[in-house]
Image 1 (cartoon, rainbow, N blue to C red):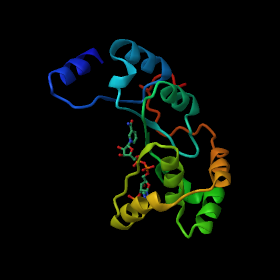
Image 2: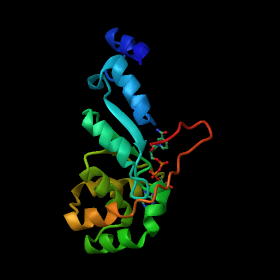
Image 3: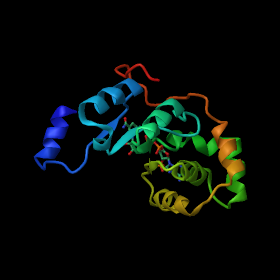
Image 4: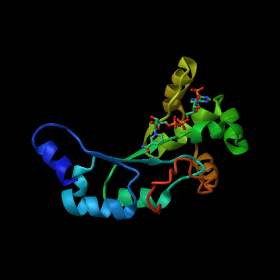
Length: 156
Ligand SMILES: NC(=O)c1ccc[n+]([C@@H]2O[C@H](COP(=O)([O-])OP(=O)(O)OC[C@H]3O[C@@H](n4cnc5c(N)ncnc54)[C@H](OP(=O)(O)O)[C@@H]3O)[C@@H](O)[C@H]2O)c1
């Protein structure tokens, strides 16, 4: 983080972001460069892994969050609750998962190899979920972490 702050001071980068930081990592980073120097923390967030401890800590420090794998690598398409909410909005389940993420203020970065999916994912910005729908999706959290390589840290 010191080296990145130095790179920023030299004008080599405009912003510094971090990814897959635990709360302990964030605390260390904040001690070194200050929370205001961390433009975003990118972590896995989707209905089945809501990562609430890290989200709450980052928010308490004013650190913006980026939600990666927001479709749980396509698994959201098969979830009955999400399918039902999608029906009520004439939307598809991917759009509902993305709307749920965007509505919490996360920068949300799905990927797709298909133009039609890219287009429909972008249109998720126009969906507004009710408080009851947000709460129903909040209940789907089961700590299902998909990005967990053997070099991963001790997750919160
Ligand atoms: N920082 C990190 O450690 C980290 C780790 C993992 C991922 N990421 C980043 O997160 C981003 C997204 O992650 P991801 O691709 O792993 O997961 P994802 O966005 O949750 O899921 C992508 C999968 O969903 C499918 N999909 C996308 N849109 C769809 C739609 N509208 N309907 C049905 N299926 C749809 C895609 O298939 P099609 O191609 O067939 O549409 C693909 O199989 C990437 O930019 C990735 O680099 C970061």
